[in-house]
Length: 129
Picture 1: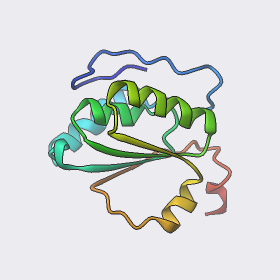
Picture 2: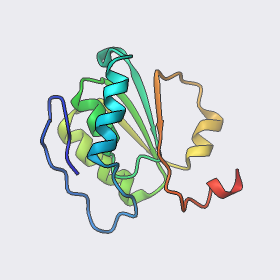
Picture 3: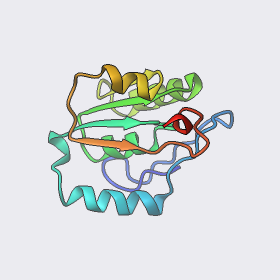
Picture 4: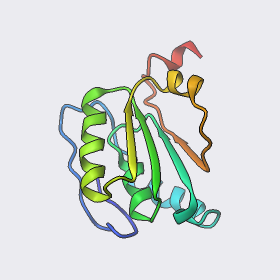
């Protein structure tokens, strides 16, 4: 995966092969962030990345200046990878929680400016909804 814009533009991040997540494509990220960029001043927003997977979207947010990102990821290997990678890029700006997204949402009292959710279509928890 590659960061498409911002401070870390062009940086390639290679996720371990044992992760079950699939990164959002560069094409999709460019479209998403073009829309967001026209509606938010990234330095002032708080972001929640649900089903964070490889952390691809989180890295894009911190590359573009977001100072506060919370990632929720149910897979322990994925959460560990995100935490290690984000800490190298932007120490202290990303909090990674290895837990079920729906449990987090049920108990969350914080507010967010942007919430990004990109679950795998095979997510067993979603079939209950």
